[in-house]
Length: 249
Image (cartoon, rainbow, N blue to C red; front, side, top):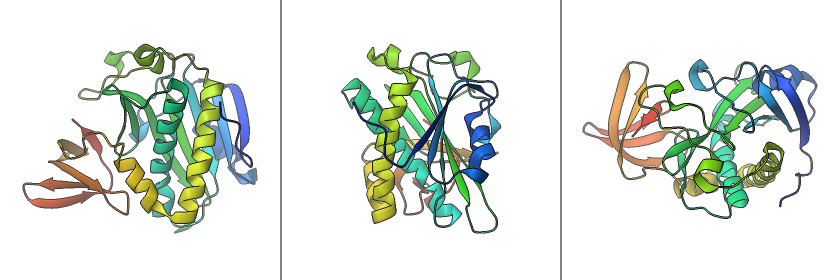
């Protein structure tokens, strides 16, 4: 088992409205990176303001950082977090089979959604003062499939798909250790090594997928993720770079 990474703080709460909200509250006084974990959230949220179901025994955590660089560079940490989640899953299960990363920020297991990532930042202009990386992982239980939006992947849990029983605290230790190593790599060498590692674990690379943003929809072959973290599709109208969207397949 991994040990808690040096230099990273830890707050464990029994109940909170949202670990992302708690990160925003402590941000003004935080002097270094800190993980916030809650056993129960009363107002958890996912991407685009969607509700996030958090059954008992699952992981609900947020990493609060004070990153250097512009908002675009800060946003690339979603890929760092996804890789850390992948590594933590491999560590606690002893296997890599079945795990994959879905652009822009989901972790899949056997084709279902195991975990999600949500980034929120604060700052003025081109300066990011704090970055909060919210992470939810279905460790023990998965939300009811009827609660997810139409066309979304079925929710799965680590326990149901692999038989691995792991507490939220133990999983967070593995995740925090993996993230600290990848964060150091990102700060030292930039996005390219992270990008290559993410692509090696990407779901549906080289296959036809659909990217939706509001009322628009783009269908094409998933070619790559570029240096800016954008999804690159080969479509009937040519090569298209997409900065933000929901992906369906």
